[in-house]
Image 1: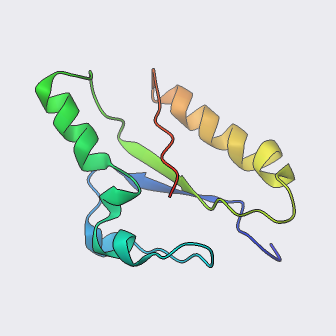
Image 2: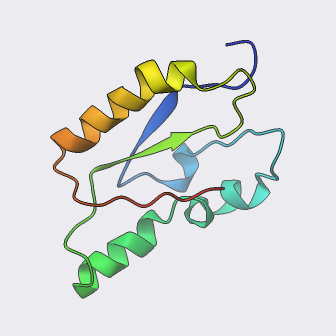
Image 3: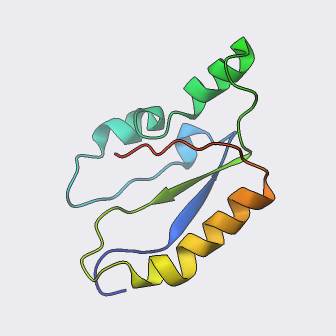
Length: 100
């Protein structure tokens, strides 16, 4: 892509901070690089599951770049359907959208 990356990253539930990278021209990524849970609250979801508030947490989570200057065609035709299929295959009942 010329500007904005329409692809996504699959992030495993057991991801470690050292495995996380963040780069974006429109937000300060310092806090994410220190603790990714400020943008993707996997540990909070784990706690809710341990407490019985929610049933379980998916094995994979997905990250997308928000700024897409050229429109969303690739996301609508390729990446969105790919992620939707993966979520359905994992039998996910609900999802959380967490904007950075």
